[in-house]
Image (cartoon, rainbow, N blue to C red; front, side):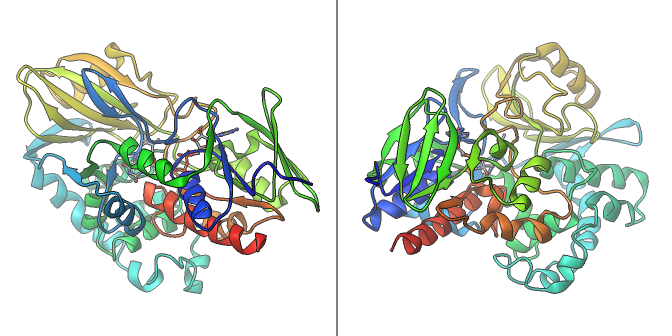
Length: 430
Ligand SMILES: Cc1cc2nc3c(=O)[nH]c(=O)nc-3n(C[C@H](O)[C@H](O)[C@H](O)COP(=O)(O)OP(=O)(O)OC[C@H]3O[C@@H](n4cnc5c(N)ncnc54)[C@H](O)[C@@H]3O)c2cc1C
């Protein structure tokens, strides 16, 4: 069979762009099929509320080796976020406020205890299962581990809100091993982990990095190409889009998020293990919002209760007569990212006197091409599914942050996984 290209990459997020660039660098011809009318996937810079805002993935750090190398390669720097001076939090049924250090103090000791064995359990973050003990605790729920710390109620609630923020989801079935993996990637230091999550933004926005990678890729890109089926046999793979276009290749890199993987039909079907993991999905199903409030506010962070529609807010941009806040909630279906009155009602309980002017965001959970925000896994995923998701099936190779070893859940993990997939595809085609 004469193939349209050597490789088809489905999805132009960071995993797809990395795989495409690496494969073209090795002399392979690559076509990228992207469902949306833009590249960059779960990162998206848009002009909203009067400035360019990151509606999806945002923060990066030098402890994240893959994304940092890409920024060095393209000469892209970071912009530091504000240093916080004030904190608000909700615990024990009431509102509290104090200096920013107070909130760190409240969660420091419990986080240290929760994560004390990180380096012993996962000494090498890129080999998360190297210590067999980790497999044995992969059914442990983070929620139970937190409750077992025996904390005073105020601290327990705060710690639960902190981890619900990290999961961008409900803690019900969130895996304790996922918390260990994050902390291990930050060399066992939870404060460094927290810094890596929300301090330094990409200069020019994440789109600047994505565009630099695409320009370097020498791949053909088709936007508005919603893939519906991937078929393979001894001769090659055929990929079909919703509007009837078909393409053939020697291999296909599929970068769909875990929660959206079952929107594509594979023939022959993916393994039972992959299908089961996709059917269950992952826990990151929350919301991210941008909120413009009246007046110039302090540099603050605020934690609500874990089950509020919005449970974390921080001030990010400061203008003369307004402040722009970034906020998160654990359940993307519980908050309308455009509902000013609903957001006002939540903030009223947490930050007295605040006036919400405008609200915006993107509903990633209701978006059929993601159905999730950042990948945060349920109990059992690490030991039962991760290796299986990384295992190629004939000509089909999965890649994406959902399937990464190290900083899974981050842009870094997407790039790591794109590299791994490109290497495997190149070897398979050789
Ligand atoms: C709200 C939010 C906040 C985040 N915050 C951070 C952060 O601060 N720092 C950080 O490092 N990470 C963050 N992340 C996570 C990070 O953005 C992702 O882990 C990463 O971008 C995922 O890249 P990917 O290539 O694996 O997947 P994706 O970016 O999801 O790429 C998959 C691509 O496949 C396309 N696709 C889907 N279905 C089809 C189809 N049928 N046919 C063709 N194409 C299809 C999609 O449109 C998409 O472009 C955040 C994510 C969100 C949503």
